[in-house]
Length: 195
Ligand code: MN
Image 1 (cartoon, rainbow, N blue to C red):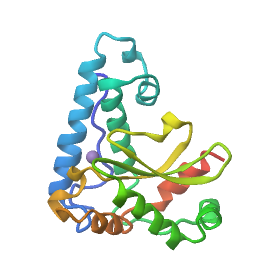
Image 2: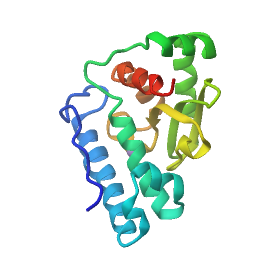
Image 3: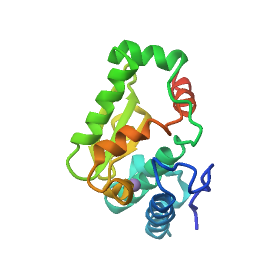
């Protein structure tokens, strides 16, 4: 198999109480594993077998795109979380957030709103545009901002499978709680890589 489910850099119960061990076991161990497994089956015997996950999502559409983007998005989401997270951005990223959104609190409010108001399943994103400006977007299903020529820095999965075991219908509560485990050290590194 070309792609394998990466090992998470923390224990399945490490994100509690924000995300339960049971949710990590299903969300990562079942849903993400299924996207990767589906992708491997779909690309078997095709030129995509020689490509990276990012190349595949940029070049594909339909089922291959859906599974490649979901595989990529979940790695991006889970690897920005940590039990002992740096809970506020600093440095150049903090400056950019203050400049483009007014304040970190205003950014957080706008990001939660993007996730809360997305109808159905999808993702909320913080990305940096080619001109250096930050933007918050929302997209349905397996949407990924790389397709739009911007560089994602942070994401929130708002598919029901991301929160229903722990929060049932309370998506906004899930999004607000996520701030406790979003590791801004990871997001700062992503931003610095674009400078
Ligand atoms: Mn998900």
